[in-house]
Amino acid sequence: MIDYTILVVEDEKVQLESLAGFLRKLGYQVVQSSQPVDALQVAREQTVDIVLTDFKMPGMTGVQLLEKLKQVNPDIDVIIMTAYGSVESATDAMKLGAVDYITKPIDLQQLKVMVRNTLERKILVRENRLLRQQLLERFSFDGIVSCSSAMSQVLNIAGRVASSNATVLITGETGTGKELIAKAVHYASPRCEKPFLAVNCAALSENLLESELFGHEKGAFTGADRQRKGRFETAEGGTLFIDEVGEMPLSLQVKLLRVLQEKSFERVGSSVPIGANVRIVAATNRDLEAMVGEGLFREDFYYRLNVVGIRIPPLRERREDIPLLVDAFVLRIAAENEKLVKGVSREVMDALMKYAWPGNVRELENVIQQSVVLCRENIITTEDLPPRVQALRFEKSTSLEIEGTFTEKTEAYEQGLIIKALKDAGNVQTKAAELLGIGERHLRYKLKKYGMK
Image 1: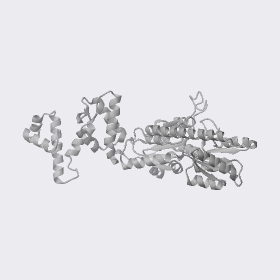
Image 2 (image 1 turned 45 degrees about the vertical axis):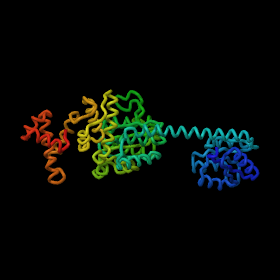
Image 3 (image 1 turned 135 degrees about the horizontal axis):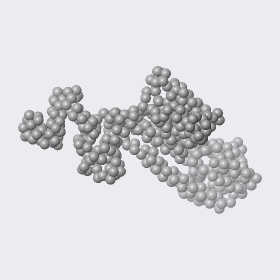
Image 4 (image 1 turned 90 degrees about the vertical axis):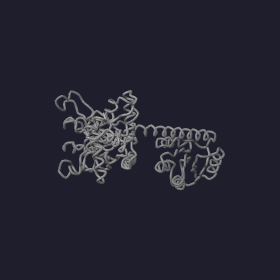
C-alpha cells in the first residue's frame, strides 16, 4: 500500500489531521492540504492516486476541484466528503467523474473500505488497460514489419496522431500499405472500439460514391427502393478511410468539405442534416498539390484533409526491410498453404534485394505467395521466382551500365553470361561450357570464383 498516495483536502484543521493520520496508519502515503488551490498544485507536481476532498470549501468547491484535477490527470480518483444536506450535490459530482462520496461525520471503517475498493478498481483498470494496449499493439500494427528509419518515422507520426481527432492524409505509391497505416491510427486511437470503414473512390461512379458515403432516401433516384445508411452513419464514432481520394470528383469534394467543416451531412434525396462524429483518414497515390495547381483538386479541400500528412516511402527506398518482410511472408503463407517452406536461398534474397518493386510491399507479398506455392523443397530457389524477377538478375548482371570499376563491370558481365548459359543448358555444366566456348574445368573455376552454385 505504501506505493499509493492519497491527497486529503479539508479546510477544518482537526478533521484534516484526523483523516490524514488514520490513512497513514493504514500504510498509505498521505499529503494533506487545507486549500484547494494548494491541493491542485500538489496534484500537478506529484503522483497522486486518490484525492479525498471536502465538498464545501472557501475559494473552490469540491466539484470545481474535481473538474480541475481531471484536467491535470484523468486517472486521479476523487472521493467527495459531504454533509447529509449536500448528498444530492455529491451524486452530481459523481456524474462529473467522482468515484464515490462519503457523508459526514466520517465513518472511518467505511472510509477504509471505500479507499481499498477504489484502489482495487484502479489496479484492475490499469491491468486491463495494459492487456488491452498489448492486444491493440499486436492487432493495429499487424503486418507492419520494419527496421528502417524511414518507416520508424512513419510509425512514430502515426502513433502520435492516433490520440487526436485530426484528419490524416496518407500518401504513397500503390502497394506501400496505406490502409494498414490507417488501421494502425484507428486501433491506437480512443475510437478503437468503434467501426473502421473503408471506401475506394476509384471503384465507384460519382453517384454511387455519393450514396455510399452519405446514404440515400427511398425514391432518391431510380432503383432506390428503400432508405439506406451511408458510411458516415455506419461509422459513427469511428474512422472512415477514404482511399484513392485523388479520384474523387470535384462536386463530391465540395460536399465532403462541408462535412469536415460543419460535422454534418445529408442523405441523398433529403434536406435533413445528420451529425457526423467520424474521423477521416484519406489516402492517395497521386500528387494532390500538383492536381490543385492543375485545377483537378480543390485547394480548400486539400488543406482540410492534410492536417497531418504521412508519406509512406516505397519499398525501394527502404530495402533493409525486405529480408524481414520476406521472412514474415514466407512463414505466414507457408502456414496458410500447409507447406514446410522455411525460407529463401541466398540467390533468391539477392534477386529480391535488387528488384525495383514497382508494386511495393503488395508485389513482394504476391511474389512470395507464388514462390511458396510453386516451391518443391523447404527453401525457395530462383526457379520458384516469377520470370520478371529472374530476368532482372540476368539483366543487371549483363548490363555494362552497372556501377563500379572496370573489373567489377567485367566480372558482373561474365557472371551474367554464365547464368544464362546454365539456364539454357538446363543447369548441365558440360553443355553450358560448350555454349560459352570454354572447358568444363574452366567453368567450374569460374563458378567457384564467383561463389555460384
